[in-house]
Image (cartoon, rainbow, N blue to C red; front, side, top):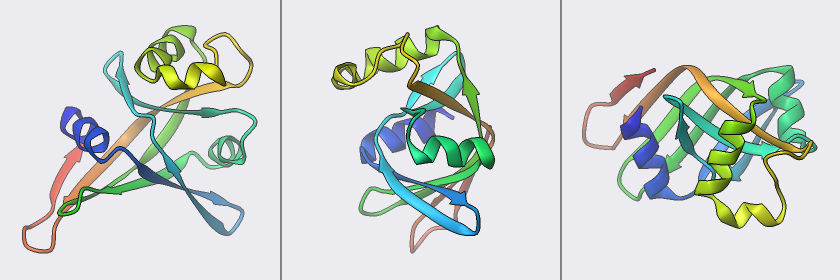
Amino acid sequence: MKSVYEFIKKCGVYYLATVEGDQPRVRPFGTINIFDGKLYIQTGKVKPVSKQISADPKVELSCFDGTTWLRLSGILVNDDRIEPKIDMLKHFPELKSIYAADDDNTQVLYFKDAKAVFSTFTAPPKVVEF
């Protein structure tokens, strides 16, 4: 899991895919964190992406560093505890202007049953599951 986290951090931006009814939805994200041995992302509960994840928690993210790309699929699990929210905002202090750990909007979710596939055009894929 740490190699997945480090790769996503290096890329800076990843694209998260969800489903809304029969329509795929993809948008850029930048938050990624390890807390309590789990890989977390963050969003706002008022956003459509939160509602899409609530309706269907299977997601996939993708990012590219110029040579290697990563596809990470899994189930996102909502974690309403304040501790992972505080930790996320500690790692992304720029978000404190719009989110607070104790507001009704901040949402952190962790990956469950995750499968990461690192790929290039020249090497066999490398798979990491957690």
